[in-house]
Each structure stands twice: as C-alpha cells, then as structure tokens.
Image 1 (cartoon, rainbow, N blue to C red):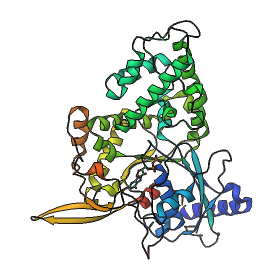
Image 2: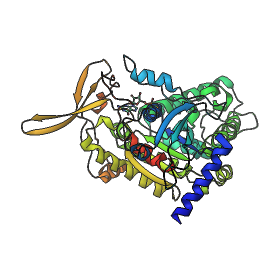
Image 3: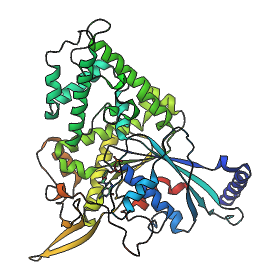
Image 4: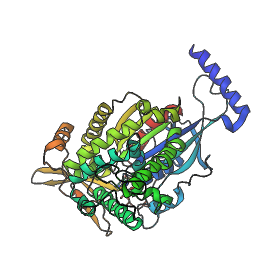
Length: 467
Ligand code: GDP
C-alpha cells in the first residue's frame, strides 16, 4: 500500500501542477509571545536562515538536500501590514549591529520553498512549492481571550483584587478611592483613569508580570485614544443610570470584546495551522518567584486559547480547522552557557505541562525547547583555583566586550516552580541583570544565515513534516 499511496500522491501532485499555484500547500505559522519575548528577532532570523540555509542542518528537508530554493513572495492578505524583514535584518547585520524594533501589531510575511519530492516516484514529478505564511501577533492580544465570557463587573472585581497585591497599582487605586461610579460620565476623568490604569499595566509589565489585560492598552495600534480603550476597572458593580461612569465603562468593555477581541480571533488566530509561543523564561526567573508564578498562570490562559472546545464562540469561528502543533520556546538561551540549556528546557517543559493540566488541554501536539533566535554570545570557561566557571562573552550596550556568569539554574525544575508558589528564593541574580548583549557583527568569512541556537530544530518541529 505504500507504493499505492505514493502513486496516488504522485497523481495528486501532477494534478496540482496542472491547476497551478492555487493548490500549492500553505502553512500558516503563528508567532506570538509577550512583548519583548523575541518575536521580531525570531521571525527575522527564521526567514534569513531559510533563505540561506548554511546553519539549518536540523531541518530534515535541508539535511536531505530537498530544499531547492527559498524566496519571499507577496503575502495573500492585502490589508495586513507586511513584516518588515529587510529593515529588521539590516539592523541585525549592519556595520553597527542592533536589535530590531519590536512587534507592535499584527504583521505577515510569505516565504515560499521549492522542494524536490521525496518518495518512490519522486523522479517522475517535478519540484513542488510550499508557502509559509508567517503571522506575527502580540501575545497580549491572545490573552484577551480571557476577557471573553466575562462581564465588566466580574472583570473589574478580578483585576482590582490582583492590583490590591501589587505596589505598581498604588496610583490607580488612590485615584478610584472615594470615586462614585454612579456619577455621570465625565470624559476627562474617564481618560485620566484609563491613563492611570495603563500606567499600572506598563509598570507591572516592567516588574515582570504577564497577566496584563486588556492587551490593547499596552499595544493599542491604531486604536490609541479611542473610546474602546478608554475604560478601567471600578469597584462595586455597574452602578447608576444610563450615562453614569460605570455604565459607560461597562458599555466600552463590551465594545472591546465585540469590536476588538472577536475580530482579531476571527481574522487572524482562526486561520493559523502551527504556532510558536516564545517565552522569556530567563527574564521571569530573574524578576523573581512572583513573576514565575504569574507566568505559570499566563501560560495556562494561553493554553486555553488553543483548546477552543470550552469557548463556544471561538469553536464557532474555528470550525473544523485547528492548530495541530504548538511549540513553547524559552528564548535568549545564548545568555546561558550550553551546559545549562538542558535545565532551561526542563523548566520550560515543566511550565508547559502545568499549563496543560491547568487548562485541561487535550489538543495539538506540543513541545518545549530552549532556543536563541540570534546568538549574541560566545562561550568560554574560566579556570580559577581549580574550579571551572562557564561564562558567556558578548558585546554590552556601551559597545564593550564582557564575559558573564549569569548564575546557576537548578537542575530540578520543581525547585523553581514550588519556590515560585510560596517562597522568597531568587535565582540568576549574579550578573544576569547586566547582560544585555548586542548582536555580534558578522565577521569576515562569515557563513550565511544568522548564528542561532536550535532554531533549525524549532523549524523542524513546526513545519518539517510538511516539507
Ligand atoms: P518582541 O517584542 O517579541 O518582538 O521582541 P523582540 O524580537 O523585539 O526582542 C526583544 C529583545 O529581546 C531584543 O531587542 C533583544 O534585546 C532580546 N532578544 C530577542 N531574541 C534574542 C536572542 O535570541 N538572543 C539574545 N541575546 N537576545 C534576544
């Protein structure tokens, strides 16, 4: 039957050749992660390394010599901004290499691969094409899924409870102290409350928290300043008559759900086949136990989005189509000597497993990895008093070279996870906070692509089976 299958596939492919580009297979790859997780750097490096595959031996189709060509093409969606690959690559590889500008909204890029067929009658049929449509979107927007199915009162109560435990919320809580939610709407007051609430979200993000909805308050795009982003949580239920502050906030919250969240899921999320979620695990570990605990919860929310069975309206949007592979990647692994990569992977995997349990997830195939989209360091070992210290060396932001030891991750991820639940333990205190490396200039004789850590393995998991 294998022969029969291959013959049949061959016939199908011949048919595809006749009917032309319309039937070329398309993989829609979603790339998400919270702000600063590394989406822009990931996409830029993935595309650069697929165009020039000198460092992509972990991608099976490449190792087998089946990728004949790769090229950028116009994307299928005319109204979605194009991912600005050329500008981002120029920033990374110019004479004075810099990190590119981060993701602020949805963007898209199509990369097409020309492949030699595999299988028994590969010789019979000509090369085939596969289009990879990469869709970049902020993880903050994904978390907005958690707002659906809640009304303004429930949302307010939850958010205010969380804020009560955080010093970043002090100004906002002071501003609503003694405020009468039933008083008539006063637009300048509404604007000032929304601004203070946004300030809180920004500060909480800097402190390492990740449960920061509504997502557009942080990344508003073209909605900045519109009424749909001019609300904030208030205590005590929707009070007052029509036209009261609380009533109007509740109305705007509902508009945010129906006019912002739902269209995003319908137009972008619902069409994705494969997904990578980038997670700055090292950043959270460095920020401390509470940030790790918060990340755990956030991961479960993200998982829930990928298991739409529970979310009726989303199931309706998705129909039979569903994401069948999700990769959770701990990014920036080049901050650690490779002897610690396994520990980082274990932490990522433990977070993912927990999130799966919490979200009662039984859907797509998932995997956890530690990667660096662009390696900005080289490794070295320092011998001192008979001890060996594993270091990474890089160019710091003032342009100097320095070697660091970021501290040691525990071998057992449970140590981090359980301490995060209650304890005060800190990790990666050492030099981690100072380690903001610049990309390495591509020296003379540099081979193609960009240096990375396991980006090829990530690509293999995400698209390898379709090549
Ligand atoms: P986005 O907000 O998710 O688009 O995040 P970016 O892709 O802009 O990355 C945010 C920052 O993280 C970058 O400016 C870099 O400082 C850092 N970064 C991202 N990826 C890597 C990586 O692979 N290695 C290192 N060393 N830093 C990275």
